[in-house]
Image (cartoon, rainbow, N blue to C red; front, side, top):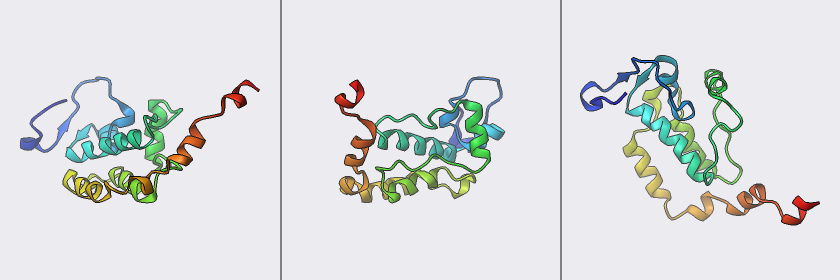
Length: 140
């Protein structure tokens, strides 16, 4: 799928290859069209993975369900331990219309402004309580 995106600005999937559906932008899944804004969508999914400490995107959904889920206007839910401000960045990356998504330059500025606020933006106490159980509880 790689092409000179700087020159063409858009590229299309021409063959029936396998796609990483959970990371692929809405317009790429539906129409086979890719731009740098498609990469912004994928970056939003990577942010989700990072902020959930390796959480799986669209848990318990196969590729076909993901496509239907997105077509219905749904997006991944906000993890409880992630601040609304961080989640909004992810949601902005997942806009259906590519031109509405932020640029990578915009994302860099937004995340740079938050870099010293990680304790407020990620509540790891909530994460720890949701993700881990006491060994005693597991053996009961």
